Every structure is written in C-alpha cells, then in structure tokens.
Image 1 (cartoon, rainbow, N blue to C red):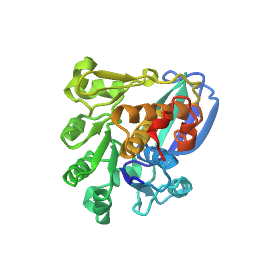
Image 2 (cartoon, rainbow, N blue to C red; image 1 turned 60 degrees about the horizontal axis):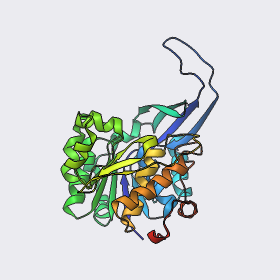
Image 3 (cartoon, rainbow, N blue to C red; image 1 turned 180 degrees about the vertical axis):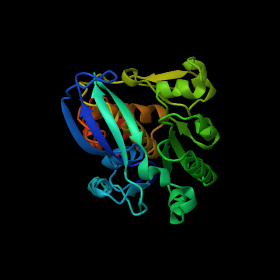
Length: 301
C-alpha cells in the first residue's frame, strides 16, 4: 500500500444553499444550512482514505474548540492517520460556502491553519521522507509549502501541489513539485495567459488544469491530452477539485500513469458531486470500480 502525506488546511464548512444570491444590502431566504468538516487539505486526505483506508497521514492544525473535536472524530471515522495533527490556541478554520445555481462561492477564515509551520516540525520530516507522495494546497502559509516541497524533492518524494486559492507566490513552487493542479481560473491568475495549449506544452506531464464540466487537460510531451468529464446530476460541487487531487494522488502512487490516473480521478469527481458536502460524496474504491468508465486493466486494490 502506498503512503501519502497531506500537509494542509482543516476547517469546518458552514454551508448555505439558496435560490438567490443577495445583492449588497439585500436579505433573501435560503433553502438549507449545514455544518460539515472540510478544508482543502482535510478533503484531499479523506478522498485518499476512502480509496485506501489508513494509507494517508494528515499534518495540520485545529483549534481547541468544538469544531476541532468534531473534525478529529471525522478523521478517525474516515481512517485518516492524525497522530501528527496539532491543536492550537487559535480557532479552527472555517469556510463560509454558498451553494447556488449548481456552483459554489467560498469565503475562508484560516484560523488555526495559519499556525501550520515547518519550523515546528520534528518527527514530521521523517514521515514526509518515508512517503510515496506529499500533497499540498494553499490554505496554509506559503513558507510551509515551500519548505516541505524542497525537503520532499531532496528525498526523492513526489509532490502534488494544488495552488488553490491562487496567490502570487505560487510560481516559486514550480521547480520543487512534480504536479501542479490549478483549475482554469487559478491557471490564468498564476500564469497571466489564456493561451492554455502553449502553457501546457511548457510544463509537460507536470501542469494539469482542471476544467470543470470539460474535464482535465495536460501535455504528455508530444501533444495536449484532454480527459473529458462525465456528465452528472449535480448536488454539490464543493469537493470536486479536492476529490480529483486525492484520487489522482492515490492512483498515481498505485502505479497508474498520468492519463490513467486522471481518468480514475475524473470518475471519482463525477461521483463526488452527486451528494451533499465536500466530503459527503467522495467515493470508495469499490464504488469507482462499479462505474462503467473504470478500466479493469488498472488493477487497483
């Protein structure tokens, strides 16, 4: 079984569903409200654990509050290893999510995620060195991501970096990661170009751009490849990108090549959006194997 370490954010998602988004100064009635565990790092760890229980360790921080306790219990329920998860004095991070018109709008309050610092790592470094892949995102400090990526590269550990939400320092990571996985909006913000095919050719087998309902695209060294999305009856898109990244990390470390790992991850994302909550729809390996697009030759266990 592969060993994957996720260094990243953990939050409680406060999710409102509405038929209308209010204008400035306006109040509208919503449809529903729920609190569900989230955070890009936590979501990606859970996505991996659904496919391979106890194969992924989460490094991050929660607050000494009720949200933190609920999140820790959720990790244990989902077979994510949390022995290196910190509890700090700041509040647990939260994300205010509005679901509207088959899409989402998100405001993040980092809270404890801001305290995730490589300067405080001790045993964590050995766990990273022993991993097959490290997964990073942008809801913790850039300095932490950069230190982890450099260390992982120096120890021959693959790094998947999901630059979300995008920030100006992201390009500093490029030389130290094996895969960078922005969505199309983050890609334009990072690289300041809408010439996607040219950009993909510049970073072959490294830059994978998720395109929402169109799928995911990358350059294989010879040509641009598009792995198309699978149409779905959408309930909640919040965790689709995190599901893709977690599933890709699992499939690649299990031996699939980039195209096959992307196809596997697209199936996982397709299934994830059909249920409520960032983590609620994340599929198990058995569920993916039942899908008509699953290739038996992948031989995943």
